[in-house]
Structure formats: C-alpha cells, structure tokens
Amino acid sequence: MRDIVSCFSENAINVSHSYSCSSYPNNACISPSLIPSIQNAVSCFYKIILSTQKQLLVTVTWCKNHTAQGLTINFGNDSSTSFKLNTSGRLFRKKKGSKVIDSDISKIEVFWDLSSAKYDSGPAPVDGFYVLVMVDSEIGLVLGDIGEEIISKKLKASTPVAKTSLISRQEHCSGNPLYATKAQFCETGIQHEILIKCSGENEGLKYPVLSVCIDKKTVIRVKRLQWNFRGNQTIFIDGLLVDLMWDVHDWFYNPASGSAVFMFRTRSGMESRLWLEEKLLQKDQEKVEFSLLIYACKSP
Image 1: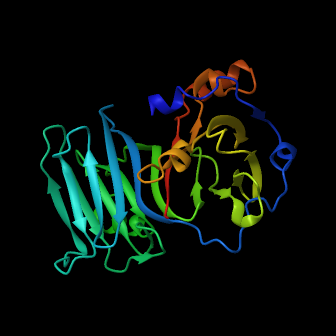
Image 2: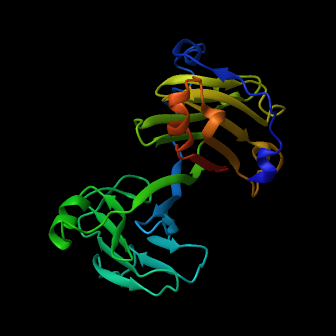
C-alpha cells in the first residue's frame, strides 16, 4: 500500500460535522437499476495479546468463486502455519470439529461448527456458526453468533481471555461499479453502512462521477473521475478522523487486469485528537488503528 498512499495529497479535507456529510444530494448513491457487486474474498487481520504480553497476528480469510468456497486461517508470518477448510467440496464432511495446528511459536487449537451456517451473497457466513481459536490455552479469537454458548460448554470459567483487536479488513469484489459493505471503525463505535458508486454515461452523465456514502449520507463526490483517478479526503466518524483514499486508475487505463482500490484508515495517537484535554491523552494513545481496503474489479 505504500506506493498507493504516496500518490495522495497531504492536504486532506476535514469533514467535521453532520451537515458537511449531507452537503451533497442524499440520493447520490442510490441506484435501483444496478445490482451491487459480489464479494469474492474477505480477509480480517487480528492482533492477539496474551496475558503473558506475547503477541500474535492472525489472518482469517473467507473466499468464494465458481469452483470453491472456504476458510483459511494463517498464524503469524509463516504461511505454512495455517488452517484450511474447503466448505463447498463434496469431500467436506467435517463441518464441525477441532484441530491442533503445528506451530513453533505457540500452541494453537481451532474449534469450528459450520453445520448450520447461513450465507448471503458473500463468502463469509452471517449466522448459525462459530470459529474458536485457542492460543497457549487462552481464548484468542471467537467468530460467529453462537461462540459464547460453546465457550461456556467446552471451557472452564477460569480460562483466560486474550485481548484481541481487529486492525484491518480487506475485501475483493467484482461486478457492477457499485460496492456495499459495513465497517466498525473503533471498538466502541457502531457498524456503518458504506456504499461506493461510480456513475457514467448510462446514467446521463457526460463524465464519470465517484460517490461514497456512509449511512446513506454522501461524504465525497468526485467529478471527472478519469482525471481525478487518485485522491483523498478526511471524514469524521465516531469521534475519529478517517482518511478516505481512492485509486481508480486501472479502471480507465488498465481495464483488462486492473482493479480500483479504496481505503478507509483511522488515525491513532496525537494525529486523531480533536480535543486537547490532557486527561484524554493516554486514552487516545491506546486506540487501535483500523483500516478497510476494498479491491474492486469491474466486470466487462
């Protein structure tokens, strides 16, 4: 991402109150004639801090294509230390089970139950499942809506719980230039609906226009997109400054293999402080920085 970020201007535009968010037409992102693109893969990056202060990076990836659908969990930087499930194959019979992962860094166990999992159009289940990761006999990561019930049955009440933070999420999409997702930018915030739309000639516009909406309010609107194919703005969400960056160069100049990149990145530490009270200094410095990356491929 360093090459992409280096292309953006250092002078971001601050959106500091709700009126600024609605300074564009509220229906700018509404497009009843377009079907939103489909997620092909979703990767979430978690930082786990054990009670011993030992840290571990865990990457959880759900993927789906024409031939397969599955789950991969990687631990640390060693690609050989991973857990994989192909949930769509005929040989996929272990929809529920556990496995010990060979690792030189920690003792890792994975428990899962996808037997009643329900899916929308994306690759990740939305209901009726759980994935539990134990690291050195501590609860490291719990995914799904029935995780707490399983924990209470399988584990002791005294089992330690590690501190886990979602630090990044990546989504790969393909289809129409309309992308819908949800994101929670801080642990104490709520989930926000995000809609990204590229309008063109088929909607009566002379030049392409990029619109980004959050919670049905347009936060940016980029005209003459083929010349303004890279840029950034800063928006204000849940008390945080969030840098919104876009790079749609390949949509226009490398359409055969290129995809657009959209990134939402929160600022941490002193950069994100909008109030200068000394009592908030320590609390703000402990905030976890979060980023959402969307790789968007337009189908011909």
